[in-house]
Structures are given as C-alpha cells and as structure tokens.
Image 1 (cartoon, one colour):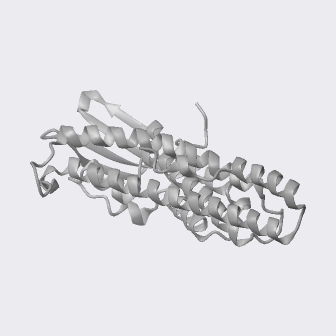
Image 2 (cartoon, rainbow, N blue to C red):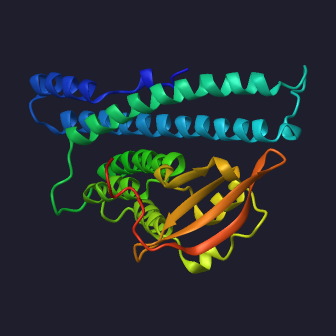
Length: 268
C-alpha cells in the first residue's frame, strides 16, 4: 500500500519532457503549453497523494481510538467485530505504509519545488504556493510529533520557523507556530485547570505533553512528577500516585521550582 505514489509524474519526467520538447520545437508556445500541462499534472498528483496519505492517517487515528475504547469497535456488515489485537496489527501495518509513503512524498515535493524555486522576496505563483503548502503541511506534522511524543516545543517551533521563508503568508503555518508558542510555557490560568484525582491523560489535555526530560520518579512514594517550565524560568509540578493501577493527581504546585527546567532548549 503506497497510496498511488508510484503513479506520480516526477520532476525527472518534467525535465526529460523539457529536453525533448525543446529539441523538437525550440521555445514556441506549443512547447511551453505542454510543459505547463505536465507541471500542472505533477502538482495535482502530489496533492492527490497528500490527500490519500492524510486519509490513511485519519484511519489510524480512528483505529487507535477503538483500541483505547473497545466498546466502540463495530462489526462489519458481514462477519465478526475485530479484536483489539487484530486492530493493533492493522495499525502497525498502516503505520509502516504511512512512513514509507511520507518519505517518498516528501522527496518528490522537495524535487518539485527545486525544479521551480520561489524567487527570494518575490510573490509566489499559484503553483509554487500549492507545492509549498504540501511541504509545509507535512513538516508541521513532523514538528507536532516532537511535541506529542516528547514535549519538545523548542524543536517543533524551530522546525516550523524554518518553513517561513518558503511561504511567509501561509496561515496554517502561522497558526501552528502561534499555538506551539502559547503552549510552550505553562501559565497560572492553565495550571488551575488541573485538579486532584485527574488522570495523566486529563493533565496532558490541560497542559500539553510534558518534556520527557522533566519526568521524575519517586519509587519510595510510588509517585511520579511532571515538571512544566514557566516563562520566568521556574517550573510548576504535578504529582501523581498510582491508584487502582492508574496514576492520578494527588498534589499540584505552581511554584515547585525556581530554577530553570528543560524545555528542549538544552541538548544532553
């Protein structure tokens, strides 16, 4: 399952067509029209591949939700409902396909953009804007993964800021950067939403993913703590204790640490 990427008209095909048409017809209007048509076809193929890839990502998200709550699993019209184990196997296969297709699409988009790069300081053409949009949308997903899997807002913001020169007016990019910056440091208002008895998932929903380097374990207390950096350099802490097999909040402290904690700005 490669989401139709093998059918894409690649930039290499565009270059080959350019040489062939130029040799046959010089630089006349018919040659340019043919080149424009092939360029447009290549762009549309990239957009179709992106749409198919996003559909597969949505399917994985749907399956993961069913795995998390087996009561939502629905049997097909014919046959029995799949088991959680079967869904997990399906998700693993889909994620392998998605990873392969993501890399292939990313390379093709970069090649396409490099074949007709934007002029520094100039306005993007419609074709350039659409191609840049694919690249930006894919790299935003990469940035968001750094947040979701490791709470690394600094790296995520850096990735997204590096995309600004590609299309400074891209609203999706501007919104993604603004959201990451608003979540990077905990505020007293957001911290107030955390209550005793909440689960890790509920705290994560209120405060965002914690940086993995800011997790602390206290085996003697059967407890763990999540430290969230504040803009002034200190950190707020949420303390969890296991209850009936699930970690829940038993203590909160917005002024837990005065010294700086890691938010991804430091390496090592």
